[in-house]
Length: 67
Length: 522
Image (tube, rainbow over all chains, first blue to last red; front, side, top):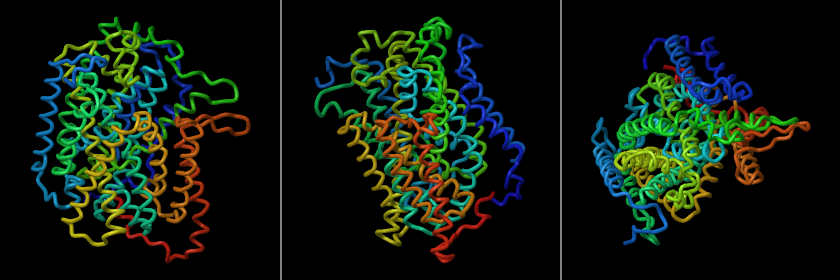
């Protein structure tokens, strides 16, 4: 409360990071494969787990950029 | 001895003792929570929202307990065990939900904080000045929440069964009843502070269990390579779509998308979010909560651990699988891989993991009933004390409804109703989530859209024998997709088409918005 008005209102290009997550994860053809494996884990599984981390990082980036 | 049922798994005394001790500990915490960050529990926003005082850390535990429930921890691995790769939709779902938490929820938090709204119904009432629309939002929330609570109780039932606690007749349900009474009592006396404090214990236990299992089990089974080699090829990946269909791909993507869109419309998620102390705490949590998604992804793999270890073929677990179906996969894995004392900890983690969301859900449903049904239609200006009293009683009623559900109705119905619940819940998206951005929609048009969405969603779900995916045919092309996504589009189209017409009919007098643009900002 009572914070200075922020650039957060309206569109910001930083939100493209959110759109990217939607574009990648909602396109299963992109990652529905076994190879390359990581520690014996098929690509389908480790790729999506990797995006958990990438998603969290991009939210952190947006937070730091926009407050 | 009513407990010595020959048909069930053997009674594990060490595990049971630790389980009971931990359960007792959280019960004490639940009651003591009334005194934590003390507030006047005779005020609804104190009882039902914890006084909106929870900072980033407590919000992390509380909303984490909302999204990643005990049922999730049982059902997602069970789905992986039974159906394979499709169960992993839970991972993109719990990734895609966080941009929404970051963008939409702080706006809702601010307007609710400024205008003293406690529920989504309150917000819709204020934004669109239409109590029938608010009623629709409230009733959808209450009806969708009931089977969800029932499934949490099912989670407790499964671990009790796995501990060997079973019986016949009335004794069969006695332990569940005890657990339930404890839950009802501390929710009544402490309100949202109870699940908030218990969530901390629950998470420590869940993380310890999950990390232990991810380290111990793959080592026992010879590494991830061997585990995945044991999974039948048909389960390992999504089926590649044939000609003229998007097949499993569109089903997978829409399941993730629809679940993400519906998540924060559920009353318990919104209650968790509104109890935060600031919009900033929510935005921080959008970056911090994915820690749970990582764990959920690893937990989903437990289903494969069970396949690799061949547990469903061992006579020791046959009774459990017969009684609980695939939901027995995770308990069987813990029984198989851990010593008794750790089984006690792991099962307590699941049972306590059920108490947290069950408590928040009953509080959220009670808030909705009190504000948008009782106060709106039966008793226009109750005193604050009376209002919180109504909510406390409503929370008991909701829980007894859920208990009756799980005891009387076959489990399959609770699961199917929970599925329907998701389809119903998403129909409040235009009023609540889009309402957080614009009041362009006419309230009666929103109500019509909601009705169309509920009717279409229910009949599509019935037509597909209560499976989540509907095979939409467009120009000879089949696009299977989550019914919730299709019907919310229909809902939006209806509302958009009717808005200009109804606005012309009703004139500007029919539109009133007590909120202003500044209410939605920091």
